[in-house]
Image (cartoon, rainbow, N blue to C red; front, side):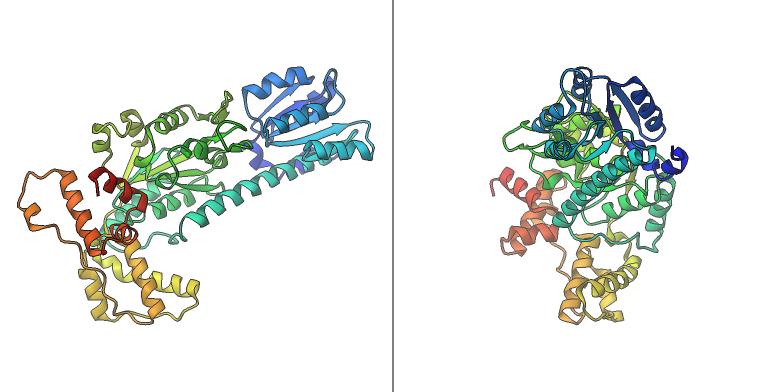
Length: 455
C-alpha cells in the first residue's frame, strides 16, 4: 500500500469539499471514510442507492465516489438519473468487474473518472485530485470570464501619499487578518474594489478566490441565481444546474459592489447566508455550507435607504460590522501626481503606447479640478492623453448646480440630486451613456432615476 501521508501532502485545499461514498462493502466504506476524513471538509457514506438518494436530496456534494455493483439499483443507473436531474458535481465510479464496455458505459453516464478494484490509495487520491482540480479550474474560468466581460482591469494596489489615504491603508491592514464582514463606503470611482482586493490579498484567504459581483449589472430576476446558484428547471431557461458565486468563492472573498441595488428578496437570502454560512440554490431544498468572507460596497447612504424602505435594516447592521469610508479625490489633491504616474506606467504598457509626463502646469490644473468621477475619471483622462499623445486635455468642468436651487436652503436631497443629474445630462447633450460616465454611476442607475422623474 502506498504511503498515505506522502500521497496526501498536496491535499490541504480539499477542506472546502464534501464527499459522498456509496459502496455495499463495509470494509471499503470504512477505508475510504477514514482516508478522506482528514483531507476533505466532510465525508458521508451509504451502502446503496436507496440510502444515498435521501442524502443527495438533503445537500449538494462536490464529489460522489460510487460503486457500480450495488444491491437494488446499480451505480451506473443512478448516475444517469443524477445527470438527468442536473447534478453537475464530479463522480468517480468503482467496479471489481470491468471490461471496455463497462468503462464506456461509465463515461457515457457522466463519470468524471473510473477505477478498477482493487486500487491503491494513491490511485484513488489521484482520481479525486483530478476531479477537484478540474472543478477548481472551471470555477476560476467562469469567474474570470464574468470579470473580464463586465469591467476593465483593476488598479494594482492602493496609491496615495495623503494623510487620508495613509489612514485608509492603516485601516485595511488592521481589518485584513480578521474574518469580519466589511462595508466599504465612498463616492463612485474612489477605489472601493481596489480596497476590497487589498483586504483579500492581505488576509489569510489570499490563496482562495476573489469573486467580484456588481449587483447593479445583474437583472433583478437573475441576481439570486447568480449569487446562490440554481437547479435544473428552477425557472424558464434553466436547462442545467449551476453553482452560484457564493459557492465559487468558498475559501476566499465575495465582493458585493453596489450592494444598495440588491432587490429586497435577494437581501433576505443574503442576510440568511451571512448569518448561517449556508446557502440554498434557487429551486432546491438542499442547504450548502459555505466558508466565504463578504465585503460589500456602496456609494449610497444606506441609512437613508433603510428609512425609505429600500434596504433591510437587519442586513445593514449585519454588513456594518466594520465600516471603512474612502475619501473622494478632490479631498486629496496631493495624490494626483502619484496616481497619474501610476496610470501612465500601467496604461502605456497595456495600450502599447509611449509614456508621457504631464508638466507642472498640467498637474496644477488637475489638482484644482473637482473630480466628480474621482479616480476612475482621472484614469480615463490619462488613457485619452496617451492615445492622443499629449497631456493638455482639460478635464470636464464640474457641473454647476442651478442658482435657483442653491438659494433654497431647505431643498431636499432628491431635488439637489435631480438638479445635478439634469445639469450633467444637459452638458452631455442628452447622451445618457456619457452622462453616466461623467457622474461615475452605471447607465442602469441613471435610467432608473430618469424613469422615476419622468425624463
